[in-house]
Length: 196
Image (cartoon, rainbow, N blue to C red; front, side, top):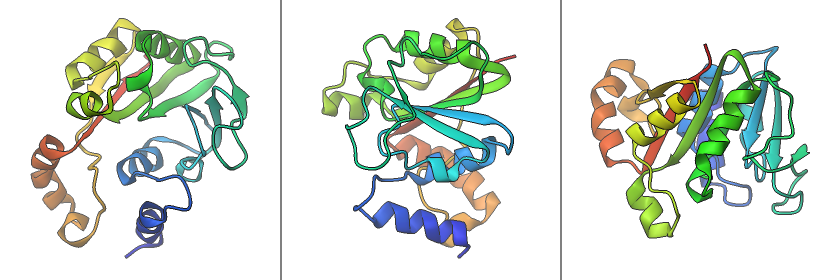
């Protein structure tokens, strides 16, 4: 087991800190770069900052919602207090489903992205949102269309499995074979929009 895999397993089972979902960590490690700027919307306890390469900062509604240092920026995701084209990656984890004006969040994320940047949405499928009583019950095509209406090139990602890379899942070809089944059975959607 690599150091990164051990860290992911430890963070998943350690409930004294906010939970880190392995597929989110994997996507951030794969798509962020040294020298770039990454913004997390609804950052909470900022548990994903350690998995971002480059500069990370978080935005949330207020500083004292969670333990820890708190967000660097206090603000609303539907009206980001940031300059146009000021960040390279924007992401949100399990929060968009609770924002009634979620299309505004996508539009604001697109506005602050630099050319070539990417906006990631990691959120629950509609069946989970329904159980949670959330106002939005997303499908992959709904989020892809939302990205495209914000002038981003939308994509549904199936390469980030919502499981730990242990046992046979360490093999890339086993992950490719298992991905459709795992994603069908999982509670997660991973969608991104690229700014061209």
